[in-house]
Amino acid sequence: IKISRKMLRKISTLALVTLALLSVDAQKNKNTQYNDGVERPKLVVGIVVDQMRWDFLYKYQAKYGNGGFKRLLNEGYSFNNVMIDYIPTVTALGHTSIYTGSVPSIHGIAGNDWTDKETGKNVYCTTDETVNAVGTEAKKIGQHSPRNLWSTTITDQLGIATNFRSKVVGVSLKDRASILPAGHNPTAAFWFDETTGNFITSDYYLKELPQWLNEFNKEENGKKLVSNGWKTLLPISEYFESTEDNVAWENLLGSAKTPTFPYENLAKDYDAKKGVIRTTPFGNSLTLKMAEATINGYGMGEDQITDFLAINIASTDYVGHAFGPNSIEIEDTYLRLDKDLEAFFQQLDKKVGKGNYLVFLSADHGAAHSEGYMQANKMATGFFGEGLEKTLNDELEKKYAGSKLILGIDNYQVYLNQNVIKEKGLETDEVKKTILGLLNKDKRVLYAVDLEEVAEASIPEPIKTRIINGYNWQRSGDIQIITHDSMLPTYAKKGTTHSVWNSYDAHIPLIFMGWKVKNGQSAKPYHMTDIAPTLAQMLKVENPSGNIGNPITEVLEK
Ligand code: ZN
Ligand code: ZN
Ligand code: ZN
Image (cartoon, rainbow, N blue to C red; front, side, top):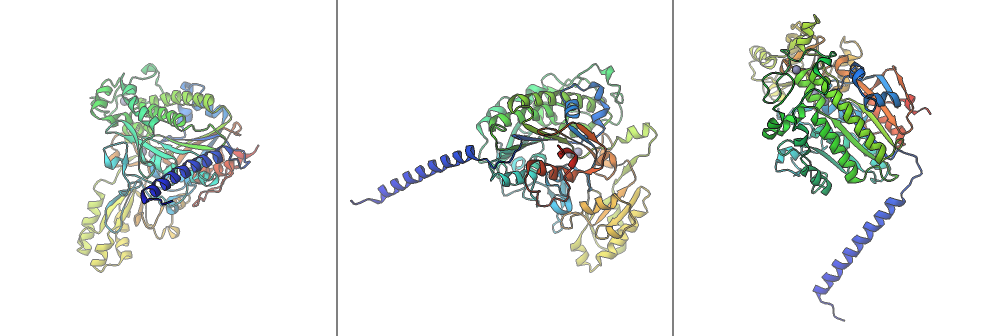
């Protein structure tokens, strides 16, 4: 029989389709039959509450219900003395270090942003111009991936252990807080697009949004959540844990004329600019709704292959930055989060089953009290950094007749302009010494240190180790500045910020609850980097590649 080319093409297409169908089938069979005999929870849920100070577990306890933070404490195991073991204590580093068990020196995420030492250009931690936005016309909002992350994550390791049968998803309003925890090869990572109010991703993960997410986005949950404005949950007179509502050190929200409740313009403000939801508790409600939709959409926790959902609760950070940790706004945000967590845990009980899932709750960093609050209460405080880059550059110009010897100051680190230093034939060490001399004249500076010489410097522990752990020679600056306690950078004239070594920024909550976790608490000192190896022990998977932490054995003992 003569077979024409056309026929041949048809036959081979048919064969390919049949093969593809067969292999999908084989894959399915493998999935349902897959069982390595290791006992694991059906679902792990990581909840990292952005900017959650450890004391928030206790400060509002009288007002928390029984199903949220108090359920975590009453059913779970709380570690009350967990510290971040590097600086700067900022978001991208927190999420990355929790999920890698590693530190910026090793995992590569040295800042939310850092300065490219060659070009002097700002680099954002997850920006990736080689990928495309999926689910939005706003190209730049979607151009993100974990490309800059060098270490594997605990979520990567779970994937490796189950031959990538586990469903792993990151969810956050913030791109970086979704992408970095989800690791290199997850099912997906989703973040908020403030031009549409939708959750989106990039084609690093998916070619198009899953149908369930299109449906979720169509519901306009953000719009619904802000439709009644923001009133306090309880009568405002009952917020006695917080400073009065109208103080000079709070920022304004949206079109509000005063930093006071009720925020009645919120629905209008949202129509004009959807990003406003970030700075309200409703950003957290939206995130947890999205988390629920993700669990349902992907059928997470339904079979015996462990899935992992990494959630970041981000609005606590935005509200904290705007109003400070002692504001009624932040108190109300935590009271509402407590209710949202209660509902979320109830859903997990119903869907996955109590005892079948493992939850851990922690934070990527804490926050300082507002400068105004510290002043009002007679405690040392102040501002640092106003015009510092220009002042230093002017002084250096006088001495070396070189223009812009400093590329920038990021994360309290001074970046030298190596190109100019080379051009002018200057010695790097000599320029560094001059800068250190200038910085040390400033009475607000506790230590200024050459980042290549930290080990030799007269700086006490644990500051010294935290500087070393945070120093990534390819991405960090050249000189580290440590200011006096409770000094805030000038951009935080109102509200607050975080990034330093002090307890208010570095002390984080850590609670495990659920699958094989007993009830209890411990005041023993642990580190943020101990979280991932603890999970690795519980899940019986290998530690992440850059891990330097140790498993917390108290939670493992049974
Ligand atoms: Zn953060
Ligand atoms: Zn207020
Ligand atoms: Zn922050």
